[in-house]
Length: 410
Image 1 (spheres, rainbow, N blue to C red):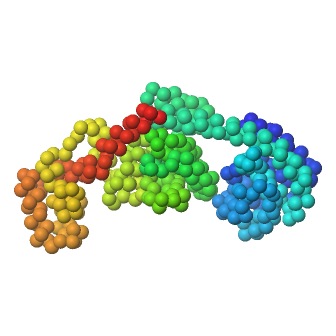
Image 2: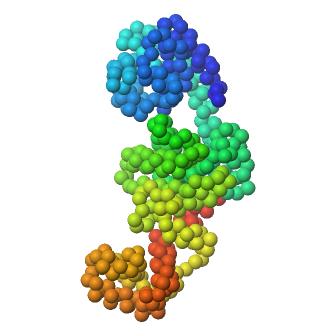
Image 3: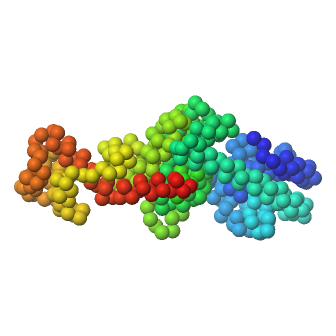
C-alpha cells in the first residue's frame, strides 16, 4: 500500500537525482527504505539488496550506526566496506525540530560537493517525512487496537478478526501463534525488538507476518502465516528475548511464552496459553526462559484448572506436607521422588540424602496423607496435588486476577 505523502517524497528525490545525476535513497529512522530514485550507474550491491528487501541488513545497520548517524545533526561521509557490498556514501539526517525522521543517502566518495543542493532538498523532505511519520503512527495505533480487540475475547473479537482480514494484515486461512512476555517487560521495547528481528530474518525463514501490541501491561505479538508458523514464532521469540535482555538495564531476566498454532477465531485462548507459558517460564523449575505452551507439560492443564476454578484448593493432606517451601520438607521430597518416576536412586541423588533417609521421609508422607505410594492412583493424586500447590505458592491466582483486571481496564 502506498502511504500518503510518499508520492511527494518520491518527486523530491527524483528531482534531486536528476539534477546531480546520482541515485538518491531515503530511509526512515529505523532503516527501512521509503523511496529510491533511478540508478545512474553508481549503485552497489547493498543498494540493490535494500531496494528489493526494503530493509537494511542488521550487519550493515550496525556498521552505519557506528559513525553516529542517529545523533548527527549534519551530513556524514561513510567509508566503503567491500565485505558488506558497500561503497562510500554520504548520509544526510532528516530532522524536524531536532527529531530524527530518516536519512537521505548518496553513493559517492566526494558526495559532499552536492551538499548545498541536498541540504535544500532535505529541508523540504523534513516536512513530508513528518507528515508520513504521523500517518504511519496513526496506522500503527489502529493495528495495535485491532490486535488488542482480537485477543481480549469479548464481543469485539470477531469484528477485529474481520477487520484484520479485510485490511490484508492477516489471511483468513493463516495459522496464528501468540507470543507474550512477562509483565515486567516494556511493551514498546517488545514491539521495537520484534520489528528489528523480523527485518533481520533470513531468506530460509518461513514467511510470517507479525503484529505487536500491548495488553494487560505486557507485550504481545501475533505471528501469522501459512507454513511452519510455530517454528518461525519460536525463533522470533528467542531473538526477541536476546534483544530485550541487551536493553534490560536492571539485569533482570526476560521470560517469554508462546501459544500453540491455531486459527484466528481462537486468538483469545491462544493469548491465555502464551501468558501462562510466560508465567511458567519465570516461576517454575525446569523450563527455559522462552517456553511454549507444550513445554509446560502437566502444569498446562493444572494452570487451566486454576483458571476455570479460582477457588480450587489443594487437599489439606498435601498442604500439611509443606513447610514454608523448605527444600527439606516432605512435600519437596515427595515431588522429587515422583518426578523421578519413583526411582529411589535418582531421587536420593537429587535430594543429596541417603536412600535410607529417603525411605523414612516417604513413610512419613504415607502416614500423614493416608495414601499408599505403591498404588498408581494415590501417586497420581499426590503428584498432581503437589504440582498445584507449587502453582499456588508461585502466585498463579494473583497472576490470573491481575490479567483479568488489566484486560478489563485496557
